[in-house]
Image 1: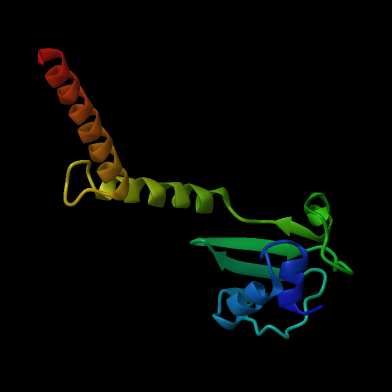
Image 2 (image 1 turned 45 degrees about the vertical axis):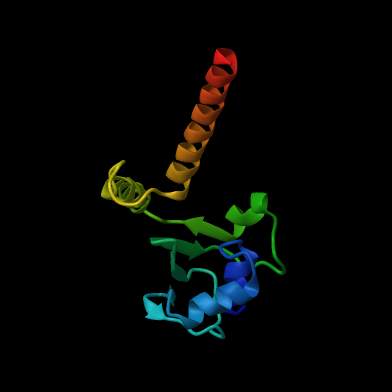
Length: 134
């Protein structure tokens, strides 16, 4: 089976065209060799996929006939991705949050909505005070 079709069948990618695109971009290697989309995959092969800043590592256990359900995926592949890869992703997320401290620079969309809501509430408060005074 072709490597792009295999990755689609075991639900690494949502569509086959996305799988083919990832292979063309060089994000997929089979047995530590960069793969083309037409490369055949056999039982016992090791596949590495770079997706969402994580290097996933899979061992091919068997070749499915068609795309399989999510519960049956583990029959056809073994996930050998080290836990450190996922920890590294969490650290990247924390680093991005720390990059812009609250109150620095221009307001984000969320900040702008919060400011607008606050100002709208203030306008209502002052209108009520004026109505009570009159």
